Image (cartoon, rainbow, N blue to C red; front, side, top):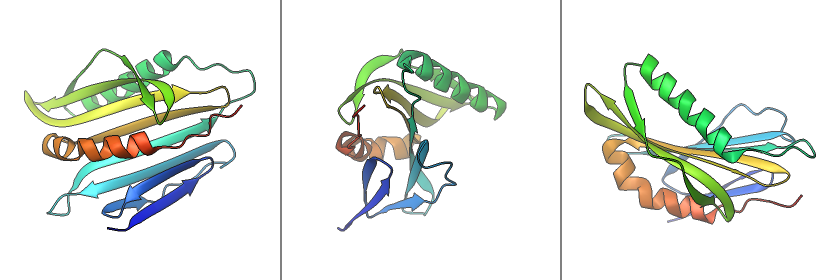
Length: 162
């Protein structure tokens, strides 16, 4: 199985060949980078979507990672409510993104009481850069692809130099 890679600014994501890397509109690459890839199921439907955003910080700016994650979670929950879904998220916990200390939460999304989707949100920051990672999939897609996403996540090489 061949590996595809997608370079963006200071981040290298090595996507397994069966992931479709989507072209995203880029803002000023010196300030922000986004990458998204989709893993399809046997029917060609999206089973899992992973998106990484990297933002260069203004000198001296310190990121409240927990605050960022709370805002990410709130935005996700509001968007799901507007779509007729309910969501329950785990308490925030410490983790890592690549080798950078991070905070994360996982949300279970239901419709009419039935679990339809799972989404994990991760936020991390260094002195110069901040990252957000989101991965989501159908109930079955998330379960089937979670280990592979964790390998992708653990392989991230984030440039944390000031």
